[in-house]
Length: 258
Image 1 (cartoon, rainbow, N blue to C red):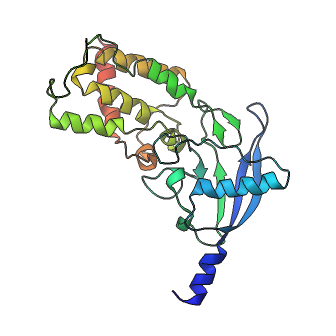
Image 2 (cartoon, rainbow, N blue to C red; image 1 turned 180 degrees about the vertical axis):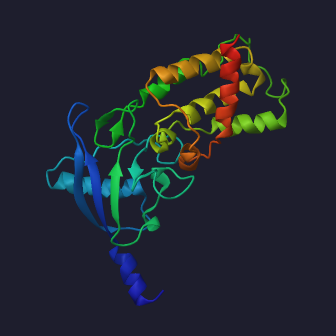
Image 3 (cartoon, one colour; image 1 turned 180 degrees about the horizontal axis):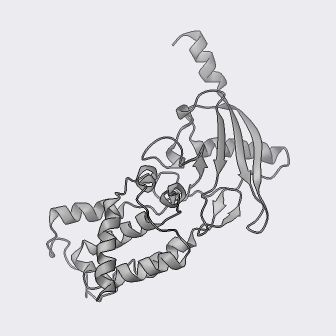
């Protein structure tokens, strides 16, 4: 490594941030500008925000509120829009797994929360995603009494169904699909949960009821309808497929007509 490159990496990056600040759900918000210097290219996006918050705290200013938990791309907590893209520019990546080397020195970033009526902003970048919990509560489970635990291989499951169910189960409920959709639709999230159980033998007894109840709950929460833009699939960090929506629609129609 030559000396110029070494010194550049040692110095770190200078990043200009425009972050949405909002004191509460009832107050108006706006973007505020911050400059963060000496940002390591190897730090994650959330670590960069941690660095900013440390500087804000040390200067007596209020840190930026944002949601996070595992920081391993598993829990789905770290939802935010970066330069108009949910989770940032890298495909199949959550914000916590996005690294600052994806940006250049001197980059200017606009950071805002998920934008949806069903995801009201609580503070700064933090939104209320409890609407997803209520959709799950409406039918995202198997309540049939199956007796004592059995061997995992006792009930045969076709490999194609097992693979599809596993793909659907990878949904982490982050809400990027809603944030990316021009209609703020939750169809991709709901279809992943409906498909996951609808493909397994244990989920067949409640399959139609599950689709009916979860879709109705989704609509009552104020999410928009799906018009097949496909932005949800493109923004999903786990690659949930658009065809799961078609599967859910078939179950919903079947349940609706009895």
